[in-house]
Image 1 (tube, rainbow, N blue to C red):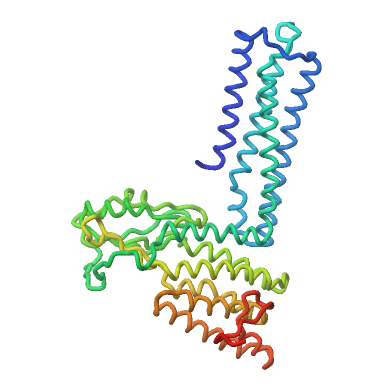
Image 2 (cartoon, one colour):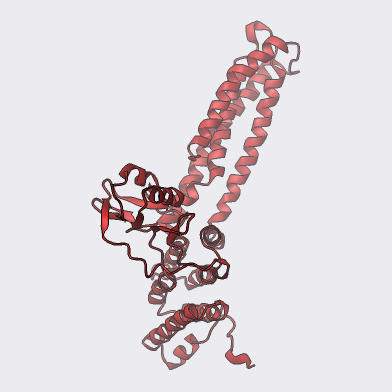
Length: 418
């Protein structure tokens, strides 16, 4: 459900209940009245309605603060994600529904000069007020999520969810025949993108596979999830088609948005963490401890990726025939994305160098396969070379080569020596 539909559903519910429930109560339960004067009831309902408008303004102010603070302090790509918190939209909807229902109930106070106020409608307004206060408290608690530790934890949580949903453990996948020897032949159809710039959010892999199986072809995607398409960008090739596939059918299987999303994109949470780290390392902020905290989450995500089968771009149908080829990042791609910019911008920070070295050393001990350990060891040599070329003196260089999970806290001696 799009987030903007949430408050609209509350508004629709408030309008329907406002028109219906007071009439039902007046027709069938007129003998049940509230033991308050008409003036007191009107003051209560007027205060409830006007208070909801004030709370709505506060909610908009909180949303603005979240966007501005997260964009400036962390990353512009993080701002909209925090703003789309559904608690914000539920709060807006509840406030609007309470406002509308309170106004509707107010219209039935002293109806036809009866000098009474409906009992159940006023009780419902009170219940809505309590629910609104609970949602407002939850919304205020969301401001705590703007703390750097909570932001990094949220990104790490989303990243772990993407890895868990998209990738499988490397040792649990059945052996597949190699695709290296398959000759696809020349492309019989080429599809290019036409339209405004859009980002690939996800592929409907089942739909693409079914279309390729029905036509007896192989679809080779030229763009990956997270890529931005511009006019005439090469999108895909079709191999082995006797007649062209429906371009509209193919495009329906490719979800395009205005920005990257977490779905099917394990690189995106790492990208956000790196953005936060390098912004913290900028001369204007100069906060290497935040970069170290970001590396904590990056190391965890890389450790999980290192134990997964990353080559999942070759998709087969139920008969085991190759049908779709998707470009997927390699282990080296993840290492480059995770560490290159932090290494470059943190080259003058002993704290960051020590934490990077600790992360790489930790990965060598956690990864199950020799080829990926070899990739980490190559990067570790690259890091040592960067330390040698840094402006550190000899003593600082020796300090920077010591692994420390806190950056500057507790040196871990290698080899089990004390």
